[in-house]
Image 1 (cartoon, helix red, strand yellow):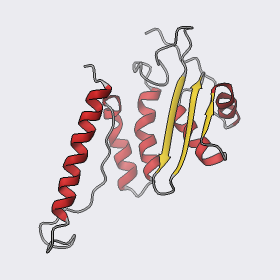
Image 2 (cartoon, rainbow, N blue to C red; image 1 turned 90 degrees about the vertical axis):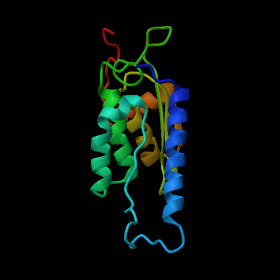
Image 3 (cartoon, rainbow, N blue to C red; image 1 turned 180 degrees about the vertical axis):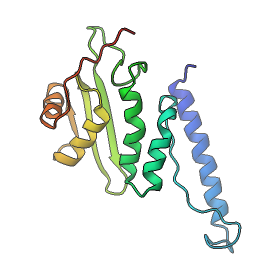
Length: 165
């Protein structure tokens, strides 16, 4: 099943609207979180189609009190590690020179910190690398050879990302 960016945006917009309507209903006068019939606050994770099989591990991280960004990383690293997923990570589609180059960015909502990498080669989990940029540098974005060098220094393994597919 092909899922376009337009489909993802439309689905995300619909989900956000339904959540907003639910929040609006919960905030009606006379209804408090402790009143009978009020829904308890539950975590919500929204992802692209290729993260669907990994939602349970992200949700488990959230309900056990884990950090929101760590929960998101639980979902994202699933497709990155999957050699049959050609959108990201291992098995990602190569460029015109037959080299897999990957980009990723993340933002930690509670702290408003962000990290990003672009044009990274030979590192599978660039989502975790973008998080490392956020946590261990004074930069927001590292690109190309500089991002790759930083990744190797941080202990990310050098990997051939091309697969038979």
